[in-house]
Image 1 (cartoon, rainbow, N blue to C red):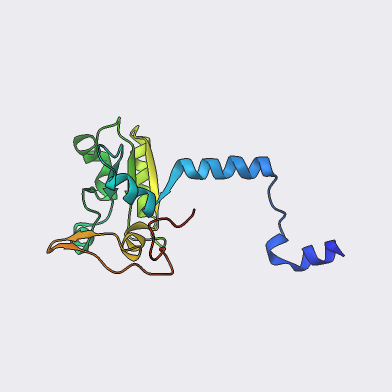
Image 2: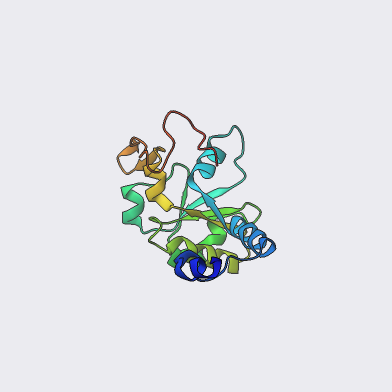
Length: 160
């Protein structure tokens, strides 16, 4: 009976990985990715956040809005400008528009190829804004109300 249910269940058509393989995979994933809440917490902490945040989008996109304190370096310019703008001893967190854009991953790859420690910020600028964090535009600082579907309301801790 279990075999019939497993075959009919689209989630279990491919069996889950072993616990050891899953632990290795998710450990690796956390080494490559971070999220907007963790980046915001690091930037809000007193003292040196220990990271530099890099916006890999175009100048037009940067002007529409970006994370305060981020470095602007479009992906295509990483090879020629990274050394001038970034310190190799400081881990870099890349972001682009959002989950539907792979620009941050491409920027992260280019930086890694140049010898930088790097993580990609999941959710990108879209989720930064949707979670209610302040952002800067060419007109100054802005903030939107947090989307209750993406961020906890009434607390800074989602329980993750």
